[in-house]
Length: 267
Image 1 (spheres, helix red, strand yellow):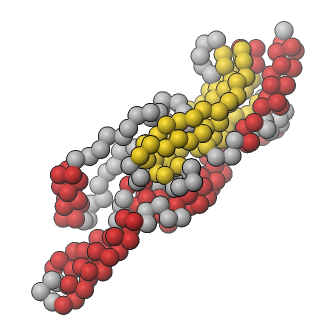
Image 2 (tube, rainbow, N blue to C red):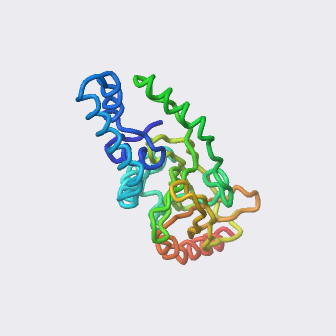
């Protein structure tokens, strides 16, 4: 399933996957076919300058655009979560739902301490030539864990996880979604239901991740805050967030108090 498409998605696609806008591709093609005229050389010169600008300013302003896009996606996915879970808001009015967005520390969404494989220069040139010749076809991409270092310890990832946890009278219900933010494509979504009596512990903490930045070609360390409702069957409910850790920490006491009271009622 695909989410909304807008200019921000195009901006993020260029940042993460180094995609050229369509008009830049056409500029290159027209310049090649008109090289025998002065205008052809001018067009190719303009293409080269713009190409360099895109290469060296790939992360300029991307952090703010990224976070704005994550917030818009969260509003869309919140409504989708309620529909998928088949609940109405009156059913989970005990405490505020937990809404967490960012890149998670679980293995299905992030590679911790693993360097992303580099593509050989020959293959890069070959793919570039194929894309220029077959300009009418948009190459199909497989979503990747691409990390960009935006400076000042701000690292963003092309794959995002969204978690929405609600608390009903009998159980905690979670909706989880993994999607590629550059294309707005949902890769995986599912729900988890855990009865209060089966929850063994409520855990909260921070984790320092070691990730490979493709634009800086070096390692970066980023902090992830996470909340987990553990059960004996390992069918746990977990949420994690990058950025403002207070979003989760402020809700932990309310979650702990609710689960304790529910377990006492059902004892």
